[in-house]
Amino acid sequence: MGRRSDRKGQEVMSSQDIPEENLPAAQATAHGELADEKHPFADPGLPPHEHRIQDVDERAAKRSERSVALMFTVSMLATIGFIASYVAIDHDKSVFVFPLGHINALNFALGLTLGVALFCIGAGAVHWARTLMSDVEVADERHPIEASPEVRAKVHADFKQGAKESVIGRRKLIRNTMLGAVALVPLSGVVLLRDLGPLPEDKLRHTLWSKGKLLVNMNTNEPLRPSDVAVGSLTFAKPEGLEEHDHAFQNEIAKAALMIVRIQPDDIKDKRELEWSHEGIVAYSKICTHVGCPISLYEQQTHHVLCPCHQSTFDLSDGARVIFGPAGHALPQLRIGVNDEGYLEALGDFEEPVGPAFWERG
Image 1 (spheres, one colour):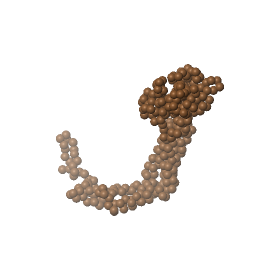
Image 2 (spheres, rainbow, N blue to C red; image 1 turned 30 degrees about the vertical axis):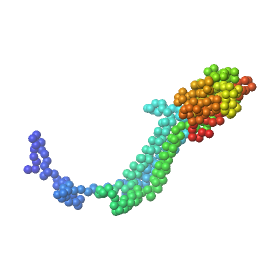
Image 3 (spheres, one colour; image 1 turned 60 degrees about the vertical axis):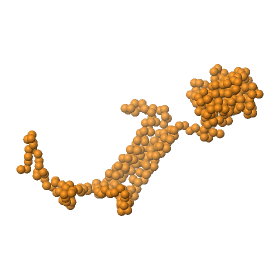
Image 4 (cartoon, helix red, strand yellow; image 1 turned 180 degrees about the vertical axis):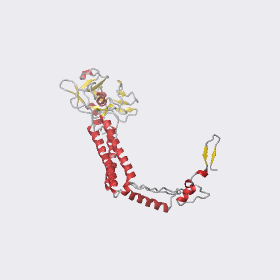
Protein backbone atom coordinates (compact mmCIF):
# COMPACT_ATOMS: atom_id res chain seq x y z
CA MET A 1 0.00 0.00 0.00
CA GLY A 2 1.74 3.17 -1.26
CA ARG A 3 -0.74 5.85 -0.13
CA ARG A 4 -2.94 6.46 2.92
CA SER A 5 -5.74 8.91 3.69
CA ASP A 6 -6.24 11.19 6.68
CA ARG A 7 -9.55 11.78 8.43
CA LYS A 8 -10.62 14.32 5.88
CA GLY A 9 -10.04 11.98 3.01
CA GLN A 10 -6.93 13.75 1.76
CA GLU A 11 -4.15 11.60 0.38
CA VAL A 12 -0.79 11.77 2.19
CA MET A 13 2.43 10.61 0.50
CA SER A 14 4.36 8.11 2.55
CA SER A 15 8.12 7.70 2.64
CA GLN A 16 7.74 4.77 0.24
CA ASP A 17 6.51 7.19 -2.44
CA ILE A 18 9.61 9.53 -2.27
CA PRO A 19 12.03 8.92 -5.14
CA GLU A 20 15.07 7.06 -3.91
CA GLU A 21 17.49 9.62 -5.37
CA ASN A 22 15.97 12.33 -3.12
CA LEU A 23 16.48 10.42 0.11
CA PRO A 24 19.35 11.70 2.36
CA ALA A 25 21.17 8.39 2.21
CA ALA A 26 21.03 8.32 -1.56
CA GLN A 27 22.16 11.93 -1.81
CA ALA A 28 25.10 11.27 0.46
CA THR A 29 26.05 8.22 -1.58
CA ALA A 30 25.92 10.26 -4.76
CA HIS A 31 28.46 12.71 -3.27
CA GLY A 32 30.69 10.01 -1.91
CA GLU A 33 29.56 10.31 1.72
CA LEU A 34 27.63 7.46 3.30
CA ALA A 35 25.15 8.07 6.12
CA ASP A 36 25.37 6.08 9.29
CA GLU A 37 23.30 5.62 12.43
CA LYS A 38 25.02 8.57 14.15
CA HIS A 39 24.65 10.92 11.19
CA PRO A 40 21.58 9.83 9.27
CA PHE A 41 21.59 13.05 7.26
CA ALA A 42 25.15 13.26 6.02
CA ASP A 43 26.47 16.44 4.42
CA PRO A 44 25.52 16.20 0.75
CA GLY A 45 28.48 18.43 -0.21
CA LEU A 46 28.61 21.44 -2.50
CA PRO A 47 27.04 21.60 -5.95
CA PRO A 48 29.39 21.81 -8.93
CA HIS A 49 30.94 25.25 -9.29
CA GLU A 50 29.58 27.35 -12.14
CA HIS A 51 32.09 29.69 -13.73
CA ARG A 52 31.17 33.29 -14.46
CA ILE A 53 31.69 34.80 -17.87
CA GLN A 54 34.55 36.90 -16.47
CA ASP A 55 36.33 33.70 -15.46
CA VAL A 56 36.43 32.35 -19.00
CA ASP A 57 36.34 35.52 -21.14
CA GLU A 58 39.13 38.06 -20.64
CA ARG A 59 37.21 40.67 -22.64
CA ALA A 60 34.32 40.43 -20.16
CA ALA A 61 36.82 40.70 -17.32
CA LYS A 62 38.27 43.86 -18.89
CA ARG A 63 34.78 45.35 -19.18
CA SER A 64 34.18 44.69 -15.49
CA GLU A 65 37.57 46.18 -14.66
CA ARG A 66 36.75 49.34 -16.58
CA SER A 67 33.33 49.54 -14.90
CA VAL A 68 34.88 49.33 -11.44
CA ALA A 69 37.55 51.87 -12.35
CA LEU A 70 34.87 54.20 -13.72
CA MET A 71 32.98 54.10 -10.42
CA PHE A 72 36.15 54.82 -8.44
CA THR A 73 36.97 57.69 -10.80
CA VAL A 74 33.47 59.15 -10.40
CA SER A 75 33.99 58.93 -6.63
CA MET A 76 37.20 60.96 -6.93
CA LEU A 77 35.47 63.59 -9.08
CA ALA A 78 32.57 63.78 -6.62
CA THR A 79 34.97 64.34 -3.71
CA ILE A 80 36.67 67.13 -5.62
CA GLY A 81 33.20 68.53 -6.37
CA PHE A 82 32.40 68.43 -2.65
CA ILE A 83 35.44 70.55 -1.82
CA ALA A 84 34.79 72.92 -4.74
CA SER A 85 31.15 73.35 -3.68
CA TYR A 86 32.17 74.16 -0.12
CA VAL A 87 34.56 76.84 -1.34
CA ALA A 88 32.55 78.33 -4.21
CA ILE A 89 28.88 78.25 -3.17
CA ASP A 90 27.62 80.96 -0.81
CA HIS A 91 25.95 79.52 2.27
CA ASP A 92 22.93 81.82 1.84
CA LYS A 93 22.21 80.86 -1.77
CA SER A 94 19.11 78.75 -2.55
CA VAL A 95 18.08 76.77 -5.63
CA PHE A 96 14.84 75.19 -6.84
CA VAL A 97 15.03 71.41 -7.06
CA PHE A 98 11.96 69.50 -8.19
CA PRO A 99 10.13 68.10 -6.25
CA LEU A 100 11.88 69.40 -3.13
CA GLY A 101 11.26 73.08 -3.92
CA HIS A 102 13.63 75.82 -2.82
CA ILE A 103 16.50 74.44 -0.74
CA ASN A 104 19.90 75.63 0.39
CA ALA A 105 22.27 75.29 -2.57
CA LEU A 106 25.35 74.57 -0.44
CA ASN A 107 23.70 71.82 1.58
CA PHE A 108 22.28 70.23 -1.57
CA ALA A 109 25.64 70.28 -3.35
CA LEU A 110 27.54 68.91 -0.34
CA GLY A 111 25.02 66.12 0.24
CA LEU A 112 24.87 65.16 -3.43
CA THR A 113 28.62 65.07 -4.04
CA LEU A 114 29.46 63.28 -0.79
CA GLY A 115 26.67 60.75 -1.39
CA VAL A 116 27.91 60.02 -4.91
CA ALA A 117 31.51 59.68 -3.68
CA LEU A 118 30.61 57.15 -0.98
CA PHE A 119 28.12 55.25 -3.15
CA CYS A 120 30.57 54.82 -6.01
CA ILE A 121 33.25 53.43 -3.70
CA GLY A 122 30.76 50.92 -2.28
CA ALA A 123 29.27 50.01 -5.67
CA GLY A 124 32.72 49.64 -7.21
CA ALA A 125 33.89 47.36 -4.42
CA VAL A 126 30.75 45.17 -4.71
CA HIS A 127 31.02 44.92 -8.50
CA TRP A 128 34.70 44.09 -8.17
CA ALA A 129 33.98 41.28 -5.68
CA ARG A 130 31.08 39.82 -7.68
CA THR A 131 32.72 39.82 -11.10
CA LEU A 132 36.51 39.63 -10.71
CA MET A 133 37.42 38.19 -7.34
CA SER A 134 37.34 34.44 -6.91
CA ASP A 135 33.87 33.08 -6.10
CA VAL A 136 34.81 29.44 -5.57
CA GLU A 137 32.78 27.96 -2.72
CA VAL A 138 34.95 27.01 0.23
CA ALA A 139 33.84 24.78 3.08
CA ASP A 140 35.84 24.99 6.27
CA GLU A 141 35.42 22.99 9.45
CA ARG A 142 34.84 24.78 12.74
CA HIS A 143 37.86 24.92 14.95
CA PRO A 144 38.60 25.74 18.62
CA ILE A 145 38.84 29.36 19.66
CA GLU A 146 42.55 29.04 20.29
CA ALA A 147 44.30 28.83 16.99
CA SER A 148 46.98 26.24 16.55
CA PRO A 149 50.19 26.93 14.65
CA GLU A 150 48.79 24.97 11.73
CA VAL A 151 45.68 27.18 11.69
CA ARG A 152 47.71 30.36 11.83
CA ALA A 153 49.81 29.11 8.97
CA LYS A 154 46.64 28.29 7.05
CA VAL A 155 45.24 31.80 7.73
CA HIS A 156 48.39 33.36 6.37
CA ALA A 157 48.24 31.11 3.35
CA ASP A 158 44.56 31.93 2.83
CA PHE A 159 45.31 35.64 3.07
CA LYS A 160 48.01 35.39 0.46
CA GLN A 161 45.74 33.30 -1.72
CA GLY A 162 42.92 35.82 -1.30
CA ALA A 163 45.22 38.68 -2.22
CA LYS A 164 46.28 36.72 -5.28
CA GLU A 165 42.70 35.91 -6.26
CA SER A 166 41.60 39.52 -5.80
CA VAL A 167 43.78 40.28 -8.84
CA ILE A 168 44.71 43.59 -7.21
CA GLY A 169 48.28 43.13 -8.32
CA ARG A 170 47.37 42.31 -11.90
CA ARG A 171 44.48 44.76 -12.29
CA LYS A 172 46.50 47.90 -11.71
CA LEU A 173 43.80 50.20 -13.07
CA ILE A 174 41.36 49.07 -10.38
CA ARG A 175 44.00 49.22 -7.68
CA ASN A 176 45.13 52.74 -8.52
CA THR A 177 41.64 54.22 -8.92
CA MET A 178 40.44 52.55 -5.71
CA LEU A 179 43.37 53.93 -3.75
CA GLY A 180 42.71 57.37 -5.21
CA ALA A 181 39.02 57.27 -4.30
CA VAL A 182 39.64 56.00 -0.76
CA ALA A 183 42.41 58.56 -0.23
CA LEU A 184 40.29 61.50 -1.37
CA VAL A 185 37.07 60.76 0.53
CA PRO A 186 38.53 61.61 3.99
CA LEU A 187 39.26 65.10 2.67
CA SER A 188 35.52 65.74 2.92
CA GLY A 189 35.70 65.34 6.70
CA VAL A 190 38.79 67.53 6.91
CA VAL A 191 37.02 70.30 5.00
CA LEU A 192 34.02 70.05 7.34
CA LEU A 193 36.29 70.93 10.25
CA ARG A 194 36.20 74.45 8.84
CA ASP A 195 32.57 74.64 10.02
CA LEU A 196 33.62 74.47 13.64
CA GLY A 197 33.53 78.24 13.49
CA PRO A 198 35.24 81.24 11.97
CA LEU A 199 38.96 81.48 12.48
CA PRO A 200 39.54 83.80 15.48
CA GLU A 201 42.84 85.13 14.11
CA ASP A 202 43.64 88.04 16.50
CA LYS A 203 40.08 89.38 16.81
CA LEU A 204 39.99 88.63 20.54
CA ARG A 205 42.99 90.88 21.10
CA HIS A 206 41.52 93.97 19.46
CA THR A 207 38.40 96.12 19.83
CA LEU A 208 36.99 99.12 17.97
CA TRP A 209 38.93 101.48 20.20
CA SER A 210 41.79 103.29 18.54
CA LYS A 211 43.65 106.57 18.89
CA GLY A 212 41.28 109.51 18.45
CA LYS A 213 38.00 107.55 18.94
CA LEU A 214 35.56 109.60 21.01
CA LEU A 215 33.93 108.18 24.11
CA VAL A 216 30.16 108.22 23.46
CA ASN A 217 27.63 108.01 26.29
CA MET A 218 25.59 104.81 25.92
CA ASN A 219 22.40 106.49 27.18
CA THR A 220 22.48 109.82 25.36
CA ASN A 221 24.54 108.72 22.34
CA GLU A 222 26.53 111.97 22.70
CA PRO A 223 30.31 112.42 23.04
CA LEU A 224 31.47 112.88 26.61
CA ARG A 225 33.27 115.90 28.04
CA PRO A 226 35.19 115.74 31.33
CA SER A 227 32.52 117.93 32.89
CA ASP A 228 29.90 115.27 32.11
CA VAL A 229 31.54 112.84 34.53
CA ALA A 230 30.99 113.71 38.17
CA VAL A 231 33.03 112.34 41.07
CA GLY A 232 31.42 109.12 42.33
CA SER A 233 29.33 108.60 39.21
CA LEU A 234 29.38 105.57 36.89
CA THR A 235 28.96 106.14 33.16
CA PHE A 236 28.88 103.58 30.38
CA ALA A 237 30.41 104.44 27.02
CA LYS A 238 30.93 102.99 23.54
CA PRO A 239 33.28 103.86 20.67
CA GLU A 240 32.36 106.61 18.26
CA GLY A 241 30.65 105.26 15.13
CA LEU A 242 29.19 102.09 16.70
CA GLU A 243 25.39 102.16 16.39
CA GLU A 244 22.82 99.72 17.77
CA HIS A 245 21.38 99.03 14.33
CA ASP A 246 24.76 97.85 13.03
CA HIS A 247 24.90 94.19 12.04
CA ALA A 248 27.92 93.48 14.25
CA PHE A 249 26.84 95.69 17.16
CA GLN A 250 26.47 92.89 19.72
CA ASN A 251 29.82 91.32 18.86
CA GLU A 252 31.66 94.63 18.99
CA ILE A 253 30.03 96.08 22.11
CA ALA A 254 30.81 92.82 23.92
CA LYS A 255 34.49 93.76 23.60
CA ALA A 256 34.41 97.56 23.57
CA ALA A 257 31.93 98.44 26.37
CA LEU A 258 33.46 100.87 28.88
CA MET A 259 32.91 101.87 32.49
CA ILE A 260 33.89 105.48 33.22
CA VAL A 261 34.24 106.75 36.77
CA ARG A 262 35.80 109.85 38.26
CA ILE A 263 38.01 109.44 41.30
CA GLN A 264 39.97 112.06 43.18
CA PRO A 265 43.52 111.80 41.80
CA ASP A 266 44.87 111.52 45.35
CA ASP A 267 42.75 108.38 45.86
CA ILE A 268 44.23 106.54 42.88
CA LYS A 269 46.82 104.08 44.18
CA ASP A 270 48.14 102.64 40.93
CA LYS A 271 50.72 104.77 39.11
CA ARG A 272 49.89 103.56 35.61
CA GLU A 273 46.17 104.02 36.23
CA LEU A 274 46.80 107.63 37.15
CA GLU A 275 48.93 108.20 34.04
CA TRP A 276 46.25 106.69 31.78
CA SER A 277 43.44 108.74 33.33
CA HIS A 278 42.41 112.37 32.75
CA GLU A 279 41.85 114.50 35.83
CA GLY A 280 40.85 111.38 37.79
CA ILE A 281 38.55 110.05 35.05
CA VAL A 282 39.41 106.40 34.43
CA ALA A 283 38.02 104.09 31.75
CA TYR A 284 37.91 100.33 32.30
CA SER A 285 36.41 97.45 30.36
CA LYS A 286 32.87 96.69 31.45
CA ILE A 287 33.31 92.98 30.67
CA CYS A 288 34.07 90.81 33.69
CA THR A 289 37.24 88.75 33.35
CA HIS A 290 35.56 85.67 34.82
CA VAL A 291 32.92 84.60 32.25
CA GLY A 292 32.25 87.87 30.45
CA CYS A 293 29.22 89.24 32.29
CA PRO A 294 28.62 93.02 32.11
CA ILE A 295 29.63 94.78 35.32
CA SER A 296 27.06 97.31 36.53
CA LEU A 297 27.33 97.77 40.33
CA TYR A 298 29.56 100.51 41.74
CA GLU A 299 30.31 101.53 45.35
CA GLN A 300 31.17 105.22 45.50
CA GLN A 301 32.95 105.17 48.86
CA THR A 302 35.23 102.19 48.20
CA HIS A 303 35.51 102.58 44.40
CA HIS A 304 34.69 98.89 44.07
CA VAL A 305 32.71 97.48 41.15
CA LEU A 306 30.83 94.22 41.48
CA CYS A 307 29.91 91.69 38.80
CA PRO A 308 26.29 90.57 39.43
CA CYS A 309 26.83 87.08 38.01
CA HIS A 310 29.37 85.58 40.41
CA GLN A 311 30.22 88.52 42.69
CA SER A 312 33.74 89.14 41.40
CA THR A 313 34.83 92.47 42.89
CA PHE A 314 37.41 94.88 41.43
CA ASP A 315 39.06 97.92 43.00
CA LEU A 316 38.98 100.75 40.43
CA SER A 317 41.26 102.89 42.55
CA ASP A 318 44.02 100.29 42.43
CA GLY A 319 44.30 99.19 38.80
CA ALA A 320 40.95 97.34 38.92
CA ARG A 321 42.64 94.39 40.62
CA VAL A 322 40.51 91.50 41.85
CA ILE A 323 39.79 91.68 45.56
CA PHE A 324 37.06 89.02 45.73
CA GLY A 325 35.46 86.33 43.61
CA PRO A 326 36.47 83.89 40.87
CA ALA A 327 37.80 86.41 38.32
CA GLY A 328 41.37 85.59 37.36
CA HIS A 329 42.84 89.00 36.56
CA ALA A 330 42.19 92.74 36.67
CA LEU A 331 39.95 94.63 34.28
CA PRO A 332 41.82 96.07 31.27
CA GLN A 333 42.16 99.87 31.34
CA LEU A 334 41.76 102.14 28.31
CA ARG A 335 44.13 105.07 28.09
CA ILE A 336 42.16 108.28 27.54
CA GLY A 337 42.72 111.98 26.99
CA VAL A 338 40.94 115.09 25.70
CA ASN A 339 40.99 116.31 22.10
CA ASP A 340 41.17 119.90 20.86
CA GLU A 341 37.38 120.24 21.10
CA GLY A 342 37.31 119.22 24.73
CA TYR A 343 35.86 115.72 24.26
CA LEU A 344 37.18 112.59 25.92
CA GLU A 345 38.96 110.34 23.41
CA ALA A 346 40.84 107.07 23.42
CA LEU A 347 44.60 107.18 23.01
CA GLY A 348 44.73 103.63 21.63
CA ASP A 349 43.20 100.20 22.09
CA PHE A 350 43.29 98.02 25.20
CA GLU A 351 46.78 96.62 25.65
CA GLU A 352 45.43 93.19 26.59
CA PRO A 353 42.36 91.15 25.59
CA VAL A 354 39.14 92.03 27.36
CA GLY A 355 36.85 89.56 29.05
CA PRO A 356 37.66 86.05 30.30
CA ALA A 357 41.22 84.77 30.14
CA PHE A 358 42.25 82.43 27.35
CA TRP A 359 45.31 80.25 26.86
CA GLU A 360 47.20 82.72 24.69
CA ARG A 361 46.39 85.75 26.76
CA GLY A 362 49.13 88.32 26.47
